[in-house]
Amino acid sequence: MKYGIVAFPSKKLQDVANGYRKRYDPHYALITPHMTVKGVFEADDKEIEHVAKAIREVANKNKPFELNVSKVSTFAPITNTIFFKVTENDELLALHKDLNEDFFGNAPEYSFVPHITIAQKLSSGEHDDIIGQLKMVGVDHTEIIDRIHLLYQLEDGSWTVYETFRLDEEN
Amino acid sequence: MKYGIVAFPSKKLQDVANGYRKRYDPHYALITPHMTVKGVFEADDKEIEHVAKAIREVANKNKPFELNVSKVSTFAPITNTIFFKVTENDELLALHKDLNEDFFGNAPEYSFVPHITIAQKLSSGEHDDIIGQLKMVGVDHTEIIDRIHLLYQLEDGSWTVYETFRLDEEN
Image (cartoon, rainbow over all chains, first blue to last red; front, side, top):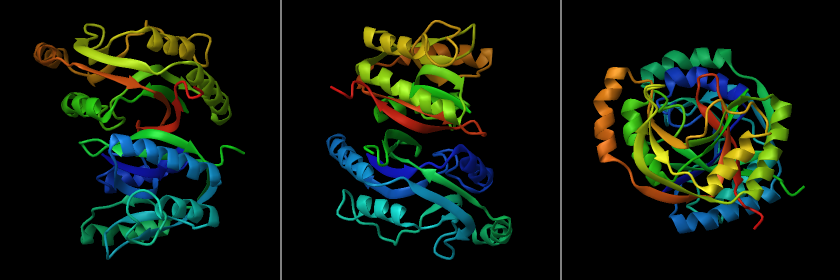
């Protein structure tokens, strides 16, 4: 089964992201707006119990982090994916590191660019048409994220939450 | 903000339900297959912290329960909603009672018929066309549910998980 770990931003920021995703993201219906902190990995029913336990330990020792988005950016020309760029900070990087280095699943193939996707699978023409306007409208929002979620994927591609982990729960 | 409490069945049962929902349920993209244990209620950001704490206490004192579905049923003629009927048992009823009687939000207007919706908002013609076949195909599945999820609703109608609560976590 396929699993992943994400943080869901507040309703306010999700509603803003969905305003774009509804039009520009074919994954709109598969999952609500999110920032991925560990990309897709495979685990069976037995393994996931161990993984969940390990995530709980990571979550306990990491702190809530600030999620600040202040610009719209794009992965083009690598992929035509447009996103709210999340400003890096020590807490977020530490959490990402703990979930991706010497942790279950393969190490990520790319360096970590924390983001909330608002458009993807666009043709180059579509991408070039909208990127300028989206950048100009921009985004500016800050909040505290105090939990992460372990999800699994159904056959139709949609994602269900398996478990929530509060950051820094012990304190 | 609108909140609700559900149990998500295993991937296996969700995939079966989605096979029908994809065709027959306009809420297909808004939430993955689920059994509601507390219907929609309103809470503000402050209230939900108290509610979440209360749900945690309820979850701690309740036990994991068996989720058995063995027949397809319908709410017609009240509404043209078709569902996998979940067999009642003491653990499930106790959990529902704790979350709905003398708990946050209004008491439910209807008696509790635990179910996983597979079709809704059908015309009477559509309903009558498919109910016979769905009943004949039927369903037969049993599993243990050991967690419930508190969800909130976005402006577009989709649902995001706020927090997971393990049943009987203390033991």
